[in-house]
Structure formats: structure tokens, C-alpha cells
Length: 551
Image (cartoon, rainbow, N blue to C red):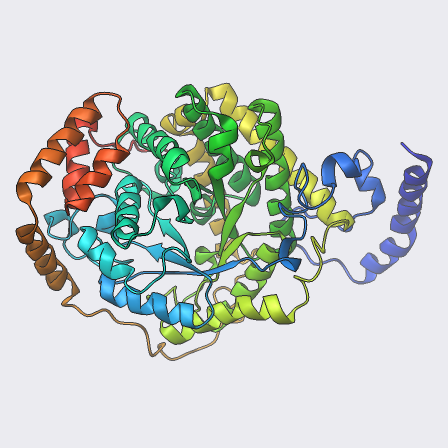
């Protein structure tokens, strides 16, 4: 221990026995449901080396950000996650948002699209266009991006099990307009492991699912080099009830599994590693969230350097999109959600996000209205232009508490990754239910705290009011489903069905072997083969994943 830190610890003991003791005797401290340091000081960072652990923006270990100038160069990409009903309605919303200053698109797909079923499939009944846009064929995708400059706009697509098909459709739309796939910029989520853990929109078992992911890695590295081939998602892990430390640990463990799968296929870590991206949640505890993002960046840089021997700076950078916490939104006193979203968005910016979606206040009740979406977008714009936090890089860096918390989150996440390694890797940990149990336990503990009132949710278990039913919610046209089915029927009638059938047979054959599946999927969608037809062909070969009950 250095002499200065020894003096600090001695002075702290004196302070605790005199000043603190007198005050707490008269005014006891407020009880909290979390074990939080009363305050931090330099002695808490005795083992920290500034160059090794904190460093400078844009340099290893990227604790302070992945770019040397961060938001002093340009702001984060402002996206609003949107998609509902038909492709035409969603296109109108995208064009409205771009007109309001949004700088990137983020596409939400309906549940049948996410799990590989066409809108006319019996299993899709009642779900078409409900939680996102319905996409059956390339014809829908052409409408979805009508009048949107794909050579200028970055597009993020929240799609996983059927990601290969939706990416192929996006490429096909661009190529039909004369836009080379080599200049397309965007991201597909394409993170199937978190579907088994937390979200449930899987189709195939883990092994063939990982094959599809590495096929995308390989294809895009050669043909769509600016595309982010995966967005490794902690967002849904947090939504399912994990802690901040678990969000980092489980997400980076998923990232390790994807790297191992790609390298097993002979891919170069510096090539595919440069196109990996991440997706995190922003929750209400502002300081914890800021530290979480800094810890994740530093830990991933160390994993890529030490574990995978990456040499490229881009392969070591953890670039991430962030979304404010959907599970934190309340149906009670919905205006309070504007404040929650502002705090969460501020945490994401202070933590150095590259891209941000802010939830709308009414999303706990329904799809957001245009007015509420505009307020959510304006929240980002006010932070960017008026708050001053984007004017300096990593403004909370150097705070004794932030640095201490960053270290603690990194250590906790490393411990989780070590346990998963001991089990045999992330796929095995998922198959054995280890990850699911950990999240379930955390979610249960949190709900118990809320139910008891030990963790306060304003308007839900404290400071409640009598309020009228919320008015002005977005409503979907009940004719959406029948109209979508009719459009799909017309599209199938107008295409060359013999060509489609031939391409689906080729896809079946290739799936039985080891050939990269993306080229034939691309050819099939160009002939207007439907999402369901392609996914059902792969179901015939790969089978479907059956979830086991985890207790």
C-alpha cells in the first residue's frame, strides 16, 4: 500500500468514527436493496494502472471509447426501432422518422417472420403485423424500403433465426436498384444463442443455427464487407431479469462461442472480428450502466487479445448499439416513462454507445404513436445538442466510484465466463440450463424486492395515483392479416414457380452437405421464394429446437 493510500484509509477511519457516527446516530442512512459503496476514494483504486486499465479514447483497452474523438467527431447513430402491420405502413413510419432527424433505420419484424412462417401459415393466425412488420417475400421488402436510399442509410434488422433470409432480401432489394452489396451498411442481430437463453424466437437446434451464422460471417466478409454480421445481444438477457454483471458476462460468453465457431471453420479472427457488434440494455441505475458499458469494452478487448490472439484494432473494439429498457416502462403514469428513458439514454451516451434507440412512453400499453416516437427521438437530440455531455470524451472517467464500479463489473463478468468455460462453453451451458437458471433466480429476487416495496418503482408500488384509462393508443387495422395473405397469394401466382421449386431443392441438397447456404438463399429470394418456404426447407433438414423445462 502506498503512503498516500495508507493516509487516506487512516483518515477515513477517523471520519467514520467521528463525523459519520455522529450524523448516522441522529439521522440513520436510507436503506437500499443493493450493496452500494457509500463513497469511493483513491484508495479503492490502489491496483489500477491508468495506461493499462483506463488509457485514452480509441486505444486499447478502449475503456474510454472506441474512437479517439467519440462524439466530438460525430454523434451516435440515432435509431428508432419501428415496424408494424404491413410493409407500406412501416415504410411511412420510417420516412417520417428520417424526416424528423433520425440517422439510421431499425426494423422490427412480426412474430411469424421472426420464427420463419409465412402470413398464410395456420400458426401465424392472429400474429400477423402485431409486434412488427410482416415480411413474406421480396415483394414486401421492396415496399418496406421504397424511396429509402439504401446506399446512404444504415439499417439495423432485429432478426435472428431467419436472419439469413432477411439479409438476402435486403441485398436483393439493393441489387435490383443497382446498388452494390459491397457498399451496404447495417447490422443483422443474428444472435441465436440469446434466443435459447432469454427470448425464444429460435427455429433450428444449436448446431445448424451456428452453421447459418458462420455462413453469414463468411459470405459477408467476401461480399458485404461493411455489414455487421451479428449483434451479440445482452439486451434480451437483461429484459429477462439478469443483473448488469450477468448481462456483460453472458453476452461476452456468447461472443466467445461465435468466435470459436468461426475459427473452427477456418475464418480469420481479425477479419470476422472486425464486423462483430454488440447490443446492450440501458437501465435506470445511471452510474451502474455507465460502468457496465466501460467494463464490457475493456473485457472484450482483453478477450480478443489474450484468448483469440487478435491483432487488428477493429477486431478488439466492442462497438455496441443500445436500447433503453423496455421492461422498465410502466403502464401506470406513462408520462413517468419519458423521465426513465431520458436517464437511460444519458447513461448510454455517457457510456459511449455507437447507436441508440429510445423507447416511447406508451410502449407498455401498445405500439407507439407518432407523437410519442417523436418525443423519444427528441430525447436523444436534446442530449446531443443541449446537455453538453457529448462535448467531452468519457466525462465520468476518473470518478473514483465509476472506476471502482467498472473494475467490479469486469471482475464479476470474468467470473461468470470462467464458470461457463468450466461447464464446457456457452452452448453446453445453455443446454444444461445453467444460464437460464441464473437469470431466473435474478429475476425472481428482483420481483420479490418490488413486491415487498424494498425496491421502489414510482407509480407502481409507491407514489401511486388514481388515473383515467390512457387515451390515444395506436391501433392496428384488423384487416392487416387478410390483406397480407392476399398479397402473398398474388405474389406466388405471379412468380416463376418452377424456378422457385428448383432453387428450394438445391437449398435442401446444400443444407444436407456443408456448402455455404447464403448464395442459394439469395437466388431463391430473388425469384420471390417466400420466407416460410425457405425456412421449411431447412426445417426438413435441420429439424426444430425443442426447449427443455429449466427449474
